[in-house]
Length: 449
Image (cartoon, rainbow, N blue to C red; front, side):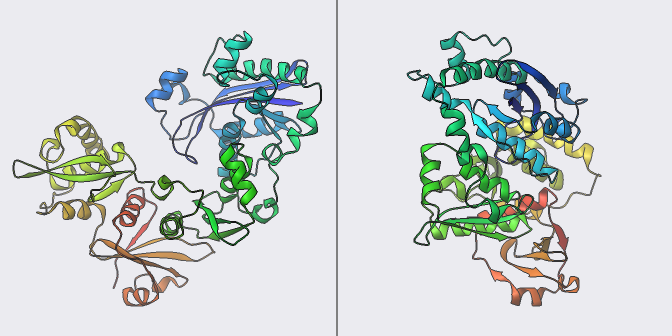
């Protein structure tokens, strides 16, 4: 039995994408015997404009749709004992597993990707995207980029592939590979890490780290390396001899450790971009004896604060306008004024009106006094074990180190924590990571004694 599936999602970086539509056709090799189609409420995640345009699914359409936990049981039931089939299956299967992992459920099925099978049985096409295959095989898809339309035409493609497979390659070889079964030589080692946060290291036979990453769903993230079928992924799979996992509990600590170790170890298979999840910076620009704020890509300049994207940067500028009682024209470069004004209006609606404070004279102090309530501060996150906390120490608005804390009475003891902490050299990027985590309410503020 084949569960032919297609998902539409919110897009975004890996691990954050949410499902907005799901379609599953249960196919017995000859005909469809069951189906499940539903919009899905992405639970607070907005659908970006380009996804709305591509799919036709708008934010207003999913407001009353069931959330994933409400459709999860039906998905489990219709796919039970079936082979998951999708065009570019690693994507759909990863997003599906991540949704289940958020519920604490380890969703596991045998997976069939129709892309490599189409390349084998229908050679010579210029492209193996679904639209290209439909055009070459004269398959009709009246609802492109909708889950039901794309899943239904994938059923038609599957029929053709099964008919062409006279040597029984699919069931004899393809479905026994790790990319299909989801089972690899490290599965048992990581089986309990579904909702575990930390850093992982992949070693070659010589003991060299060839890849490292961090995640708050370590099992799902590590499995992805063994489910991928690209040439690079297959080469790395062959080179991996062992795995080490370091649980942190704190996602911020995992991000900090991964960044430092990527710079120090320079693993063969990591990309340069893996070091940085904050890819833009807030840069102060002199204009008519005033300081205006711009948001620029990270190159050689040292920004006052690094941010994930332009959208996040605009919120920081709006926050400075609110804190220092300034207009967007006073603080933003002209191209950002309109969006900062919109964000400022939202902040004023959602925050109690507070007395404005005097504006610092330097750009660095302007943003840092907004980012952190005090120049010397302790920020607390959860640890890896019950009762354990992670304390991050900042002095003069800069991250200087971190330490694990078991006794709650120690959390405000600056001198004690300062002696015990693992020191971090001055690093504006890591301080920016802390600022982002605090803004997103992932950390608790403690005023040191």
